[in-house]
Image (cartoon, rainbow, N blue to C red; front, side, top):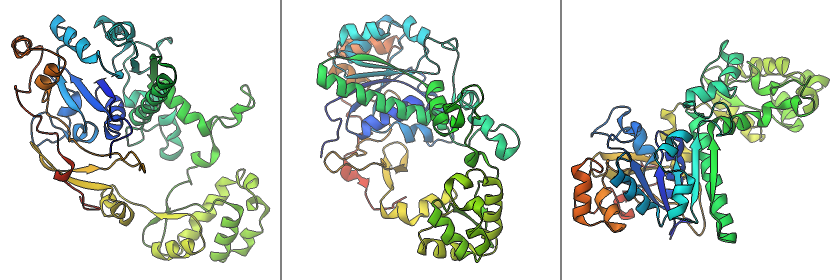
Length: 419
């Protein structure tokens, strides 16, 4: 079953997580993704404990379904080779700062000159028209800039980073939807275009979905910040033997919960009778909720609340995810035999299509593993490729090498829940 993007070619000049996460989504959907790397490789190849050189765990997680082409783009011959690779591409994505990509001669105009219908996406830290345009941007910086780190002071007493690279991943998803929308526009009109996806603006927009709050009405005097989610009492609640996440949400949920808790006086308390009144009294409401939850065991609460359709869930650790019965039932994890790294775990694409399934057809490539094959594919002779290799303009991928990390699907262990 071909993926939704089968037949599309993506040239990927991104690194770290933001861009690679987006381009992996394209690869999972069937696109041909060519990951262009420097001779040193994407920095994420070198992060964390590795079994083999330049094959770190995050690289394995965000670079499957891609081929690796090494080009030292500071060398004219490598630059020319990249333009040949881009000549029949549908999408070109990079994550360099605007001045850096222009210095390399790989701005939109340069790529559009060889691929007029190209969807060209610049994944930047900050929008090109703003004063921060040339500043470096990483997840920590953006969490601080967008208000996310500061919002954690309501919980921790001081600004804190959220313990996941949320800025990278949200911006990566923004790249994915923006590129797909531009491809749809091109299908309708024949027009390619340039897209700008800045991390800071993406995360500011993300944060202000709920935290714009009363500023939506009065920029001068309205309060910013959604009180319910900023409350220090909004947290997993301690039970007699652990923790649960419980959130009676509707008026009926709260009436049922207070009845279950044998607290009839709270069921008729006007402070908690409606959503509008509860929104004014989250402090006392969540304090009462925590006090109630502390009186029974975790399994008791989960059974009683689920029987009444009151939203409740256990608190999983990261390790617990691998044993979660739902994730096992839907086959969220697979084991795969990587040609250089041995057995590895991969997380399946989370979306399901009835006609154009996502699939893991290739595991993360070695550095430059497909250089020779890709350059041959765009018309370079073995001698020309050897000349590039002699100057260090490319590395890897011996003539005739099939690309060992391209795994036919039958080689991937498809046991549901395999880890």
